[in-house]
Length: 278
Image (cartoon, rainbow, N blue to C red; front, side, top):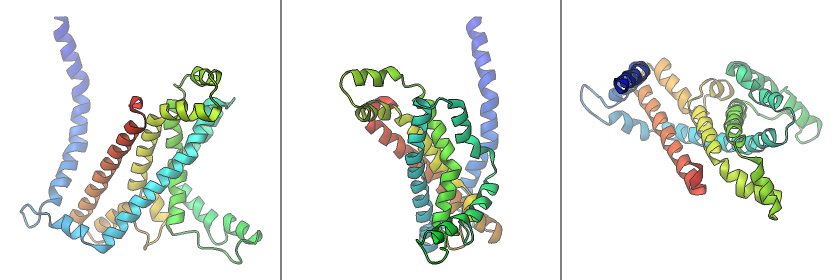
């Protein structure tokens, strides 16, 4: 009797969420996927063939992957020491965490417009570069890959820090103290203990950052230009400007497949670096 009750309770807990995901996520996703393989009411790869043979799409695809990987790397390089300091040495941990996640409470539109002011020809950065004599006149820091990368890093760095903090807080401080008592320096203890045990958080943060950069629309739309299109802005261009919803769906499916493949690669690399981390 009790086992049957537990079985029904388990179903009551699982079914609502499963139905919600199926109706509002899986069915629309598979309907979009199905439409991309249809041409003139028959199964065809014409949409994907036309897409991948386009030089314009190849350039946009390469730029999207390159900027996403670069932004992920920069977020890891900036987020790892920040998370390590907050976790181990900060006396005001709560305040430091609040400062780290504070940008997430600001709209991406506002942040992008702020960078437009900062990186503009009359912005703070150009004024500083000209005043110290590095350049004779203001440089073009906006509407290119540089400004898009800056926007991506500022947008997704908090996610990397939070992912690493969740793992670093669970690493006992006694491990590094024991390593020190055995003659290991702080650097050796960090490389042999802290870094391997933080791989899972680093991978989680990398997946979140890469996925966010690949799918972000506001930041590349405002900080990029017409000749620096990425996949997300390309989807908008096909759907809203050209009214080609099938081709827009094909680009969207490419974005989904790429993010899944990169996530798989990140997890495989983490297992090779530290099998115990997963």
